[in-house]
Length: 214
Image (cartoon, rainbow, N blue to C red; front, side):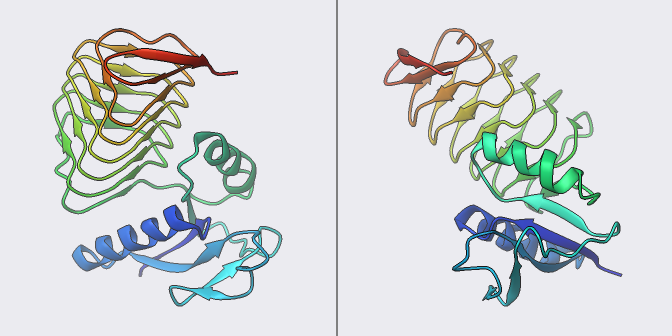
């Protein structure tokens, strides 16, 4: 019997997760997508991708339903997981594209979204509720903390640590042995060659601090 799942957010990232689950089903017919959850009045009550869009108030509420969140912004993803998914009693799962080879030594938590064409090296630790997009290369002995967003084509060297609630922009490259703090924003295409402290935004080549996040 297929497992029922709701996707929180019917926006572009939520629909990417719909495609991810559809690809998983091509390899292993595992999931029954029963709908999106989105409070946008233009979407609620209609169908997108041939499934219903429910409001948060009227969403199905059964303990045997799984749920995931299709929002890349870590602040809103954290809020939805904590206040709407976990408190509602939904089950949580990892969704991993069938093209991704998972090393036996991989440590992984719950609620992670991992898209296709990603290389994961050895002794990697991916904690909880992370969003890892296509064509990324994750180096050995990497630690990824909770609610991290890694956008497409990011390269992370070995022995790095990515702090909680950090977003790494598309095409960024992080040198080996780097520690990036919590609540950081690494701009698209940036090359990171030194540690980044908590609550910092970085753009440009190789390391231009533009602001401190609050």
